[in-house]
Each structure stands twice: as structure tokens, then as C-alpha cells.
Length: 96
Image (cartoon, rainbow, N blue to C red; front, top):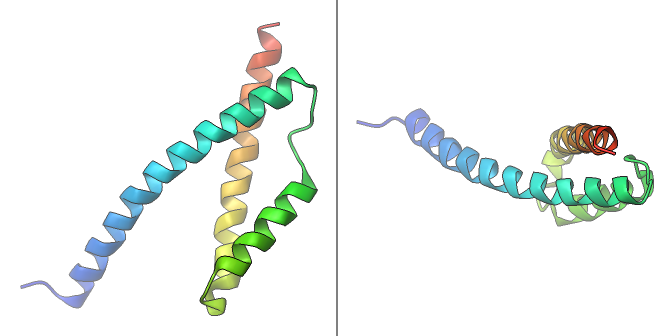
């Protein structure tokens, strides 16, 4: 017999699998951004773009009690994206 904890963990596992798929798709797009920036000599960090994304996503978030936790989560996503861009751009520069 499943407990509420077991049921909750099953839901979390399903969501985590979906998040992995979305993460892969996001990082593929980040790779395209990095290649464009490398080809055009652009910096990785774009504060204006980050603020726009954070504001837009905060508006979408229906449960405002989760906003600070979402910001922590999304800061991690942005940091991973910038690190990945940095790796790609460094490889691009090494291939020139």
C-alpha cells in the first residue's frame, strides 16, 4: 500500500524526468546563443537580458509564496547556462 509520501515522491520523480528533458532542450538553445556570441565577439553576461527573463518568469509564477525559492532555482539555471556558454566559447576560441 502506497503512502502519501510514496505518492508524492512518484510525482516528484515524474517532474524531475520532465525537467531533465527541458534542461537538455534549454542547453541546446544556450549552445546556439554561445556560438553566436563567440562568432560576434559578444560577452557571455547580459544583465539586461537576465533581468527581463527573471521579471517575466516571476510574473508567470502564480504562487507568490514560492517566488524567492523560484529565484534561487532560476539563478542556478542561469549560472549553469553562463558556465556552459563559457565552455563553448573557450572551445570556439581554441579552434581558431
